[in-house]
Image (cartoon, rainbow, N blue to C red; front, side, top):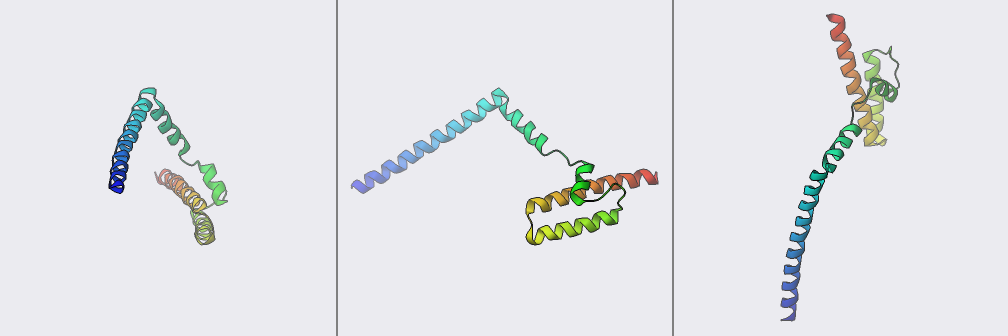
Length: 115
C-alpha cells in the first residue's frame, strides 16, 4: 500500500516538474526574443562561422600565391590523409575548407581568364 502511494507521488511529482520546466523554457525563449538576445546570439554564430579567406587557406595548406591547382591538390591530399589516419577531425575539416576556398578562387580566376 505504501509503495503504491509513493509510486503515485513520484509519477505525479515528475509530471508537475516536467510541465514547470517546459513552461520556464518557453518563458525564457519568449524573454530572449523580446530582449533581442536570440538575434544577438545568431549574429555571433554567423560571425564566428565566417568564410575562410584566401590567405588563411593558403597558410593552412602551406602553399604560395603562385602555386598551381595541382600543387594545391597534392598538399590537400597529403594533409587530409594524414589527419584522417592519426590527426584530428577539426584539422581535417580545416584542410577541406581551405581546399574549398581555393577551389572557388581558382575557378573564378579560370572563368576570368577565359572571358
